[in-house]
Amino acid sequence: MEDRRIKLGCALPQQSSHLFGDALRRLAASAIYLYQDGIRYWYATQPTVTKLAEDRAEQLRSRPDLVQAEIKRRIDADRRQTADFARVHPLITASGDVVDEPMVRLVILGTDFPHSRNASDEATDLARAIFETRGNAPRLYRNALVFVAADKGRLQDFEEAVRRFLAWQSICDEAEGLELTPHQKRQSVQQRDAAEHTVTTQLAETFQWLIVPQQDKPKLPVEFCEYRLNGSDPIAVRAAQKLKAEDLLIPRYACTNLAQLLDDIPLWRGNHVEIQQLVEDFARYVYLPRFRTPSILIDSLREGIALLTWHNETFAYADGFDEATGRYIGLRAKELIPLSAEGASGMIVRREIARRQLDETVAPSPDPVQGTGTAEPVQVPGTGVQPPPMGPSPTPLKRQPVRFYGTVNLQPQRVGRDAARVADEVISHLNGIVGSQITVSIEINAEIPAGVPEHIVRIVTENCRALRFENQGFEEE
Image 1: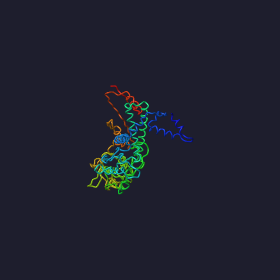
Image 2: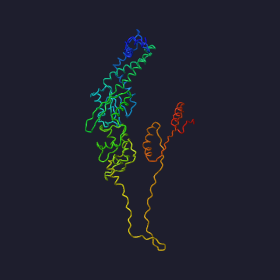
Image 3: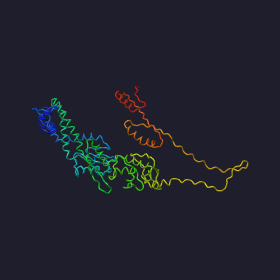
Image 4: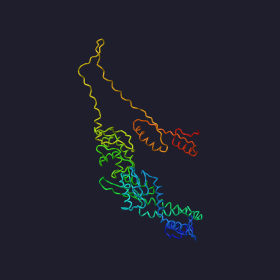
């Protein structure tokens, strides 16, 4: 019998037939003797594979390890999209499993540690333990961790959906050994695909609690605040979007805001602070902004040093500090400094202190030479009187270079990263000079002794044309 006839026989006047369609689908998924093939339904005396699937799903209750392995497999596939996180730690159950690094990471708590709304439970206890320690040692980089936990109310349904999927998957894998009919094979595949969709949907609905350590001021206690994640994107993507929306994960920070923060906390160590120390501070202390990577801080420092109005709004840069003389070495400002997040060196200096030293180092203009009132003798032909000796000739100004060239070899496996560093640490400084004209070319030479497959030749050639290569081609010798 077709489904439309069943709906027609069940529905009353002015009653929607969609309700009966949903009931029919649920019945077909659970009934033992009801068969379905597309829009056709019928009863038979032979049990369907639904009974077998239910029995296998029930047996899996005694094998939670298989269910956890399937959940972990799906979380592992989901965490490949790390979004704005340096790393995603899946299904963590102990603090020692999370490394102590300054890069921001997302910790997905295990299903044995679910969370309920506005509750202090297993999830918040584990999050606090991971936040405070790594194994038996205290954790240093506490501002680099955020957590996601499963919803306690949805976890049971999610695990049941995983058991149903595993049951149908096993039936599909053993179709030949079970001697299933063609119709039963189709039914098994349909039910497995439906269970797959259900598990995927419920995964996003289950891991919905974002737990974030927060501290408004240095002397206040750290609180673990919860935020609900919505949507069906991967867990890391949804967590990053929520953090950025709540200003809990900073992708870019204004240099003037950083200067104000340095003064308000304060973060100065005397009249200066080392850049590496700042990187450590922002990764350690929860009352400071949580930067996506240390490079966000470095970019803000670089902009603040180069700011034209640095003497009023930001800070200066120095290579070091001479304790004996009390003066800064290599003090400069209002210029681009090639800073790097990896092994950052140097320090930033309070603007008023830097301005005072820079003003002292500016030599005063020489006063005009005053006349003595006595005329110097001038050589007169035949008198033997010599002219006064001339003063030393002025030192000619050193001519500045007007052209730069450079060649660098990049690793083929890391072209994007290396090219970005070249652009950031070399090209950006040249491009910042008024009137500069820069040409950047990429030369590719590839030797493939075994030969290039035809489809690769076609793809590379078409892509080169699309990218407007001036010269390109393959050679047979």
